[in-house]
Length: 102
Image (cartoon, rainbow, N blue to C red):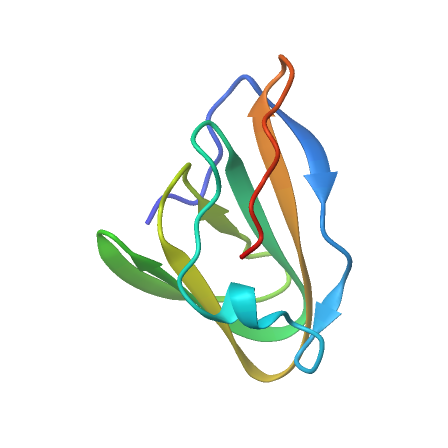
């Protein structure tokens, strides 16, 4: 699984901070960003399981170990106990498309 965003992207939006209780169901099941939109899943506290569904791979995210989401790649996250996290969306510095959160 790739752990670095490509060059030339700009952060343009981020979600609120979620915990194990407020993490939306849409992020816990298979979902995607739109074409052209990359995302970084940032763990602030605790651990998350990050699954990429095509091609399959999984890793544990924690503070200092973000998960990189490629455009239009199905993925999901699962809290592994108490957690705080947010998602940051990136696109080429032109007018970015809206991201999908569910």
